[in-house]
Image (cartoon, rainbow, N blue to C red; front, side, top):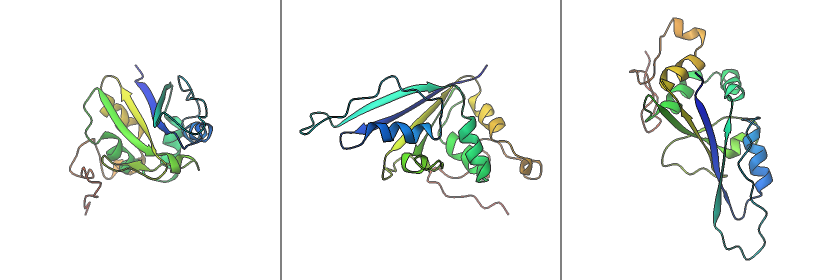
Length: 160
């Protein structure tokens, strides 16, 4: 059974909501937020609004990760602090606006905001391993949380 994939972000009062939605759709083309707030005029009484919606697949994101040859890094970044039923990670909205994927680690606040992705289902760690598989793992096998995984701070492990 395919997991449930939720994508959300916060739109600040000074941001153009249509550009925010466009940047997210450049990585998740089938994303349709539950609502898109109206453009507010000055003075603004609301600081930010959260928008969210489901997507059917992360295939387009995976194609970007494959193209940039960062599938192992992606597996590590996606599964930091995960449990076997839920994975949560963030992507830079600024990178997404140009069709690129850049992971945002916990405690980081990137210029341009971030996109939160939650993947919920049974054995999602295994599902991410399968989705990020590549032929290099035949020579250097990898699994979620192995000794080759990046640290919580994003530091790379020495492989050799």
